[in-house]
Amino acid sequence: MGSNEKGPAENNSFASRFGAIMAMTGMCVGMGSVWRFPYMVGQYGGGSFIVAFVVSMIVIVLPLAIVECGIGKGFGKGMIGVFTEALHSKIGGKILGSIFALGYYTMNFFYYVVMAASVYFVYSSAISEWNVIPADQIYAHFFENKLELAIISVLLVMATIYVVMRGVEAGIEKMSKIIIPLMFVFFIIVAIFGIFCIDNIQLGYNWYLEPSLDVLKTPDIWLAALGQALFSVGIGPGCVLIYGSHLKKTSDITLNMTTVCLLTGSVGVIVGMGLIPACIAMGINPQSGSMLIFVVIPSLLSRLPAGNIIGVLLFFAIVFAGFSSAIAQLEIAVATFATDLKWGRKKAGYILGIINIFAAICAAYSEAFYNFWNDFSGNYLFIVTAGIGAIVYVYVFKIEWVRLVFLNPCSDIRVGPWFSKFVKFVAAPLMILCMLNSVFPWILSAKNSFARNVTETTLTMSTIVTLVVVVGGLFTATIYMLNRCIHTQERTPEAIAAYEEEHKYVEK
Image 1 (cartoon, rainbow, N blue to C red):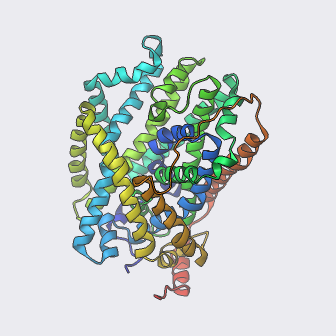
Image 2 (image 1 turned 90 degrees about the vertical axis):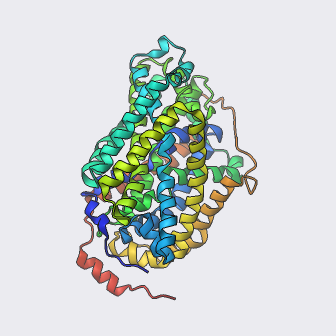
Image 3 (image 1 turned 45 degrees about the horizontal axis):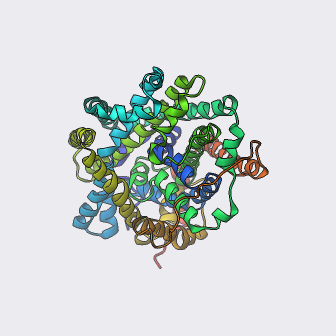
């Protein structure tokens, strides 16, 4: 069923473990963690969603991410190559692999318009534009200037093309080692500012962190949290697989992806800590949907001391998160066609980049174009490919084979047969159910809002417990795993070969 030999993708590998982790975290942390997470917390009642999200990320999403990344590293191919191996058909592999690669890539058709708004709000915050235009009208005012929107979008596309065409080490890794740490620093500063500079912030933290046992008993909250966790990491459509293909043969998938998933979860929680409690404390409704970032937050910043400085840091961090994801969405197609169709990185980058430039212009000028690709790529195509991906990665390739051949030989943390059974009978079925429910919401979900009122102006005991156990535990585990990744030596080729010889996979 394939081999552990690397294909042409090895010529474009991450040079360092830290760089690989930063790049893969950037791949995961996009608008899913920054834009979507805060309004999902607002919609689903705060603390209960946080608890369900952290549990879903660690218990369900992490094992699936390890499997997908392991397959990517093991084959060292693009989506076409991997699906050719799965289907034992060159034609079938080309068709399905191309659908996956292009499906994720087309998310950039609408994505740059959102990024352009984030870039504009860096400028808007710097000049305190809310002193001239009402804060809740800045977003609409910006979108009326189609030329400006198109120019910023095109510049962002060109920057993405430049990074991707420089390659994995000189482009993606080098960029990620700069912008991802800065993103974390900026978000943490925003969260700390709220703690010390906003009155009644305890009220906001009670709303954000205090869970409700009654809400946690409903399947709706778990489906929503699992969907957010899956969306944040991007399990299924192939981005995790492609970035896995850029890892060296000796890379420890289990340790690396555990760190990446914890970092991704931490970003979402930190962003929420910086935004949601501040909204609640200042009497602003956090259930404003996707407009939370571009309408509600500017209104919040306009009422804060040093709001312009905090706004610049916040929107720079959002731009960094969005840009790293845009790179991943282009890279999945470039790597696939460059490797599997022998186009080469430059040819693939030029062709796909030019198409993306035209798409970005269309999205800037046509709301219908933007809405179509937002719905088609961002929702339906993502969900369908995620579900099919889970089936292929876990069942077609056989999870036990993946564990013994692609995961354990290089791992510092070697998982036992229990891992295969858990992924096969629990994690993958729950992911597929979640994807089906996203397309057909009548299957399980009946309620999509858990609004509530909080009046306690001092931290409640349940808030403190959640802060210490759930949030503190998440942050502690993240720091520990990142430190372990940085300081643990990867296994030597000799040690890997010895393990492979001792634990050969036997087809049952």
